[in-house]
Length: 266
Ligand SMILES: Cc1cc2nc3c(=O)[nH]c(=O)nc-3n(C[C@H](O)[C@H](O)[C@H](O)COP(=O)(O)OP(=O)(O)OC[C@H]3O[C@@H](n4cnc5c(N)ncnc54)[C@H](O)[C@@H]3O)c2cc1C
Ligand code: FES
Image (cartoon, rainbow, N blue to C red):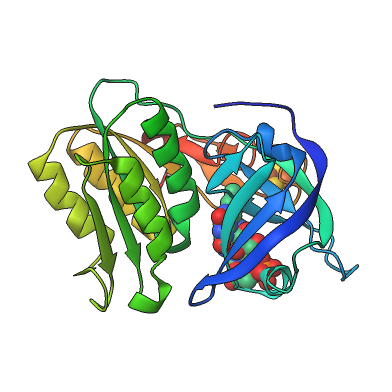
């Protein structure tokens, strides 16, 4: 799904709070809110350190065009995200967006299956809202390493969007919350129980490769939101290559981040 051209926008922090162990929830107010399509991302600049000239590419969970707000979830993994976690309500900066190509609706009729690993949850929630708005039923699986890292409020949102007919399964690698095991185990079971037209996945590369393989084995089309180290975020530096089955490379920031899983050379 494409929307408006990539542009620099101002943003103001409206909320920035811990959501789970090592994960923060950021709400910004920005004109980009009215331009984002589900699965797209933006590149946020964190003020205060002139040596950090690159932005932080982040997907979003939801956007409210009327209120001009965007909700994001991010893991603190390095210097940029650590400094982002120190931004307080009222502070402002700039972002570049909307970037990339997001999710598209299923091509066939039938249910969708959503699979999120760790901090892959925000774009999967954006897909859930897109499907709910289109009246397409879905089931979802959300995996985390351990109970402290489970984004319970967001999984509740997922369940609300899935409705009475939707199954939402939480897994942890160590069994401290929900089912013990990887999301691919729960996915295998759901694929045997129910028919799906389309899978949507975001998470660590190894997880998405497993999801893509399972979907392919069951003849289910699969979209994946890929992550690469990024420079510009809009196609100018060629540093975010995704190898393709057909040979050659695509740019994650403009051809993706969402790809048809069958096109990716895992
Ligand atoms: C399209 C896209 C959407 C993303 N959406 C989200 C999101 O919604 N929530 C979220 O928490 N994170 C998301 N990320 C990842 C996020 O951009 C990085 O974690 C962040 O840029 C790290 O910045 P840093 O300065 O804190 O860490 P750095 O100091 O730059 O790096 C710390 C560690 O993280 C690794 N890392 C850094 N950037 C990336 C990356 N792009 N992909 C994989 N590993 C990386 C580094 O190799 C290093 O090991 C997304 C990335 C992309 C490309
Ligand atoms: S990040 Fe620069 S081309 Fe993709």
